[in-house]
Length: 428
Ligand code: DOR
Ligand code: ZN
Image (cartoon, rainbow, N blue to C red; front, side, top):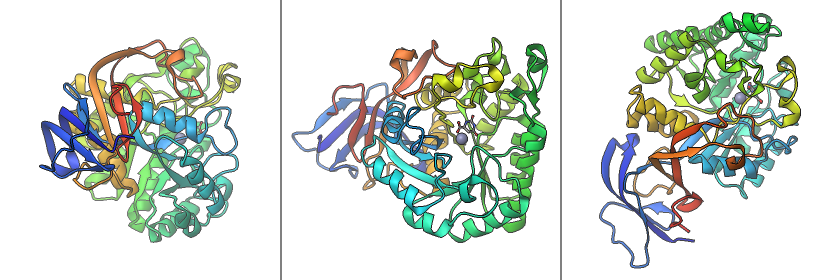
């Protein structure tokens, strides 16, 4: 283990400390050394020329499938994929089997994570079994280590239960993460409702199914004064609702994903089940609105909604296929494309993938302040690579980006100063 490491001549970008400058970063005993600290003689040197040195990336929305569906992913394989994608921490959703609605499952996840390659922050369920009937025990889950609550995968249908969840979770300082979907409107749709669904003869989910529920969450957050976080926003309508709620001071935060700002429902053509997720890929108008929301601060975070599934769930008829795609290993290059396209600045990239997720979840990280644990990601924004089935680190292969040539990737992922992923070959 490298006891000390010197990242030399990189571009240090750390919005939490208002830093964007060329320089060296010294890591001593797993922590970020103060400026001017003496460099030990035996220091391992990593040449960071041309690279960005950023606070470890945090993916606030992933599915690790353990316990219960380890053939799709487990905590070790999922965090290995996270580290390979530049993430030093992930927050994992509770829709495992059984659902994480308890102290026992939270503890199990955290125990398994000790063998993992990234920090794991469990999210507990809002309702017991995520069945939407009665609230889970937020107090005991918080004690065991959950950082938020969510019934992700399904919406909290009952508005009164959602109100109680916001009030009760607020008392424990836990954010509520909303999977916003009005189920009666979504019906049995399997893709976005629009010209493409008509052409393909598939039943559609209208954009209003998302917007209606986003508005309910905003109304409840405004009414209760408690914060709500909107997961995986896919539509122009929801983006506008969040923008205007923020403008009047409602405690709402929101994330979107690389697939919503990169793809449209055209990716479904050919009945491609690797382009099927919930909410579905939308129109070009929606995609452009999401990109504007990333640029103007409407969105706080980019999360992946990494949702591994095996061929058993994906190599079936389109309307039978499971929802979800893997995302941990493609988030950095797809998000860097926003920088190359002039949509966002490098600083904003770091805010969206590190600073803000840490702030929303109130977890450590998201900062390169001297003395803090050395959770650091080194990114080469120019490096190109082919994303192929053979190269995937996750246990699952359900990605619409397979076969793409991607630009920009993490070359070194450090957790507590230890290399969890290393393409430089220098940080061992
Ligand atoms: O596409 C999705 N996959 N959306 C969800 O809400 C759940 C997720 C999963 O668990 O596979
Ligand atoms: Zn999810």
